[in-house]
Amino acid sequence: MSVTTPDTGTTRLLPPELVASSTFLLKRLGYAAKERSLAAYEREGLHPYHFAVLIALEAGPHETQGAIADVLGYDRGQLVGLLDELEEKGLLERRRDPKDRRRHLVQLTAEGKRKLRRLRTLAREIEDEFLSPLSGPERDELHALLLRLAEKHEPRCAPLQAD
Amino acid sequence: MSVTTPDTGTTRLLPPELVASSTFLLKRLGYAAKERSLAAYEREGLHPYHFAVLIALEAGPHETQGAIADVLGYDRGQLVGLLDELEEKGLLERRRDPKDRRRHLVQLTAEGKRKLRRLRTLAREIEDEFLSPLSGPERDELHALLLRLAEKHEPRCAPLQAD
DNA sequence: TATTGTTATACTCTATAACTATA
DNA sequence: TATAGTTATAGAGTATAACAATA
Image (cartoon, rainbow over all chains, first blue to last red; front, top):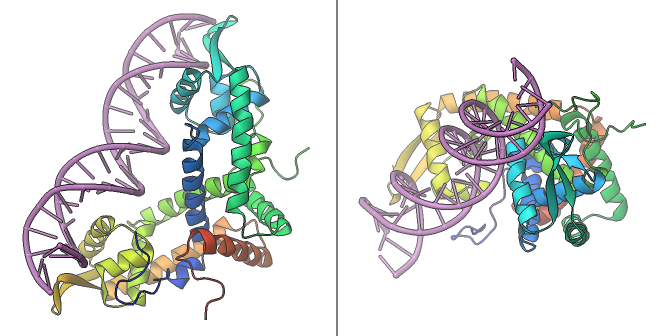
């Protein structure tokens, strides 16, 4: 969509009152970040959610599906579809837990580990491009501030006073 | 949903690799901010989108629908429904532009202005609550950094070197 | 033919709840 | 009876495109 008015050709700016609100900016930037990630991972045939699942799997090699969902804050029903897709691509394997046949133990394949390395590179590129207006120290400053907010609003993010 | 594992009772934290990413935090915090705003405005029978429309209307008292959509970056089809709801509540009026009968001129009613004042108070409260982990100077610092990012990723936000 | 506002449609995301198989 | 995984469904949110009136 065009951002310019047909009559004047000048950009119509958002009302200053909205731009003055940090929560407004957070919403807009979060959306922009999501859009960009989505487009980038799509080129790899995957979704940012898949990346998070692969990371969780590398951290805990023999995770149960419920554990993965809990760690990432995903719904269990939602996770099933993600795992289906990853399994279909040969990036992970599901097998029954012999100790409790209700459970599935999930782990990365060699192919999955390769893919994860590629996605890490991609994630770094996305991050770097998105933060490009900021210097190194400014990025650190921003991250520290966001973390303070996340500590309150996303308790699953590690608390600052971690032991 | 529970954030604790049934076996240990300890909180399962997100993988540090994700928490280390500012774009990840932006996505999560943007989502959290959206959720909170939504719940708060719902108590007023409105949506954050309605608030933005009212603000745009106050700034330009006789806006055409297309102009409002452009300023806020909304789709015109989406805007129709928002205006319907606001008109139904008596907060604004639509009338045809005699100069160009395709257009609708939209303006706030007295009731709409009152409502806008209430919503401004609400917005301040939401903002204050969301940023509560940060001191005044830290909030300023965060806002400045977000604005720098928005300048690139949301060009409709006023550029810093505004004249 | 192009534009304004409107309506209809479809697609994504997400949340919920039923269902199965095991315990 | 409760739990792990699965499936189905519905709801909100959003994007796209067709449509009628007017220019």
